[in-house]
Image 1 (cartoon, rainbow, N blue to C red):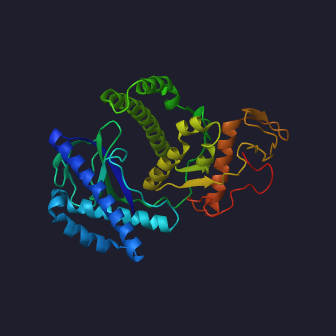
Image 2: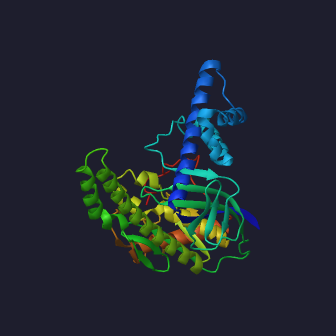
Image 3: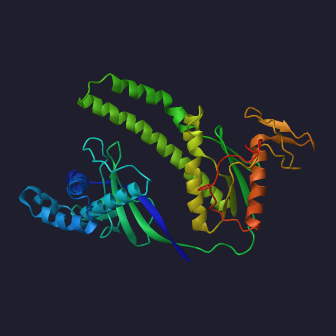
Length: 389
């Protein structure tokens, strides 16, 4: 069996003293990041050479024994080392032109978080945090695999969460052809339309909460800058966003779990979510979260040993007749139903697209096409007019 990473996320229930300790750990991580970044910048300006991780780690050990910074000794040493590794990774991404130059972390804007690669234990609905102690958690499912690393973070509402990374054994997939293959067409008013005719309405979580959110944001605008009442009003806005996010995540997790349990193979379209988020439908697209749906379905299908086929984004799934294959080049987005001029078949747009995605996915599966196909490094412009959806 192949190994993959699996992540569990639980909410912490720390005492007042433990919460203070978690904040101290997160503050130490931010301080070490800023100190290491300043040291690298000054050293490069003076010598035109860069400090390595090993050199910074040696300097950090000396800094911990200085009187002004002796408080660092009360913080977990692996946490501080991990902050240096994170900075090293940030510089690697910068030099690879995948990210911008690392910046200093502000105490007001930076989210409280830290990561410990080892020594974090989980036992009896409690997690052991070095230098803090055993903290109660809301454990919703058992963790039987050994923990690889743990990340602790505080959200905008002020609640602490722990994310545990473990190694998970992926079962081998079936050797024969899948028994039930489903094509999935994602949408905005309907979350998904399946090739078997099932239509799943979209919950529209953000649209539903817009009035509540607007009221909470108006309350923030009436409060004085820097006041305690403004801080409380800002937290109320964060609670609205948190509730919306949890509703969307709950819907997507239940939907993707049901799909993986019911079907043996899945066929999706490679949507350009980033491009759709720049259109006038951006709010509805982000509310539907097609990218998060694909991410969840991909890793759950992998854990179950079931293939996920991704069809090219320029495949004419909506314009092609699923009965005879004829293209309707003049099909527009407002045409929700249409009739094929060649064979006379009456189509519902989304169901027809799901059928075409299923058939194209079966063709890709038959020729041994990888299920992780994407457009990275390829031209994303349609080859001929009329090939788009």
